[in-house]
Length: 287
Image (cartoon, rainbow, N blue to C red):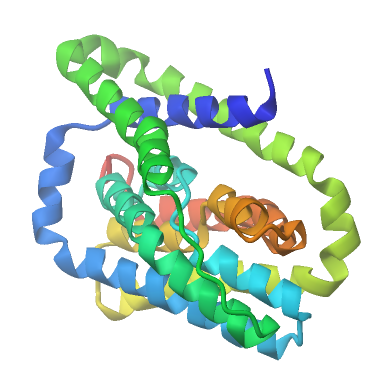
């Protein structure tokens, strides 16, 4: 079985385990988290693409690498952000709501942002359309359905779910580690060749995105769990979407290089968020 099939299967298992630790009450709490939800969306949907444009200019990247960096910034939140928010003791319900919303908005925002980048850096004007059915279906199959199944399993067998949850979360951590290793191994050549040119800009985007999420949340005096969730969401992008846009929709594989590097960078930088989050949020304070 190829990695292209194992990746979504692994992510689906992770989401099912996340759902196993959640109840409908986690989502009901979002009724009082409007400020956190709005702040997270503004930083991710508007702030990140602007930041990528600024960094591409500041680092004097080539036109192709500049567009690739913007594509990464325009991608929605990554599926693993929900699991890593859980590990970081962040607000998982807020994280899931942000991931789902940015994934749906990406059908509109990605073509606009990437189209602007193509025109600005390459002098092109292209209309990019994410297939609505494929995008919505993929998000549902990899995130929504497994999450719901996990929550249903907890509701139907609460005592058993609570008992196996610690072990299940360890399994999820192992699956995630394998995904990171496989990505690193498969993309090492591209990373090695292009690291010197675009690596610093990619890492800056990643670190500043997380720092920006933290800063906005702290400025608004949001709860620690919400602050951690926003920082994780802003730093973890759905690199698979970025690569799909570059390779399949635009037809320029070179534009996917920043995404390849970002995939590694974000999985290293998240370790700092996990450490900070577990200090900020007491054990048991976030689902």
